[in-house]
Length: 192
Image 1 (cartoon, rainbow, N blue to C red):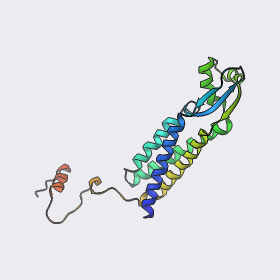
Image 2 (cartoon, one colour):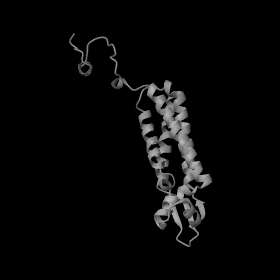
Image 3 (tube, rainbow, N blue to C red):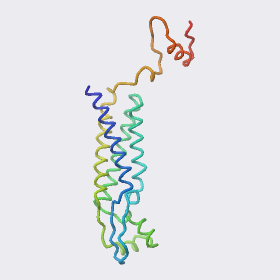
């Protein structure tokens, strides 16, 4: 029972983290007040952190794959989930806490046509952080927790049923139609 709960909990944490990451990538993360008197600029999550959407989709794919693979691949996929979660946690914390110019630079360049740190630094009067980077940061903690839980419990998860097995299962008694087709698929003659 505890193993089944660990499996469902880890899968849920990873999938929720990925979904929240995808959602937050489309929302406003930073609001830039401009020193040149221009309009306030809203910077979305995918502009502030370009790897946000692809790595969030990666988390969703990892959660789906984790539900389908065997014990060895579960550990590998769970380890990848931990690495992705840690990377996203560091990158999001950097944008959230340091508010670097490179997070708003591309959006400013698109609006003003100016490029380079020196030119853009003079344009920024202040940067306000919205709640969405905090949501993303919390989701990366969920991703780390789900990946770590899967990493430590994946060896005890139940495997798929009979239809997912690749090794033949010895059977006693008469062979039914399904087993005959399965044996033909594996290249053995069921009539012997």
